[in-house]
Length: 126
Image (cartoon, rainbow, N blue to C red; front, side, top):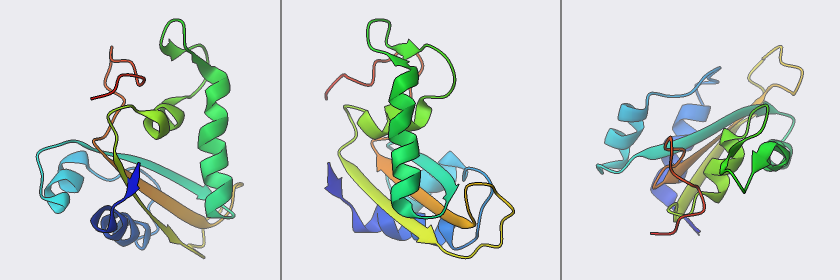
């Protein structure tokens, strides 16, 4: 996976708004100037590493045999390992003033090609 400066810029612009939910997928795609789906992970945290570690910890909910979540949430994890994703860009906004137990910083990561298609294994390569 390679760092994509345009994805980073778009992710940073969204993080700067101190969002409390995901951005619109059509808007992400239009901003990137492509027809490919742009995936997104977003989290409130004390720091970037804590958020990424939380997303990676969702692996415990993933069942490789059935290629599905066994319980809980695992969409952040599957986006991180999505086989067709080749580029990533992230942005962080500190001090959003959130009353969130995980912290008041926002981390946004954008992925191209985005993943998490229903019925498609994240382990498939292009």
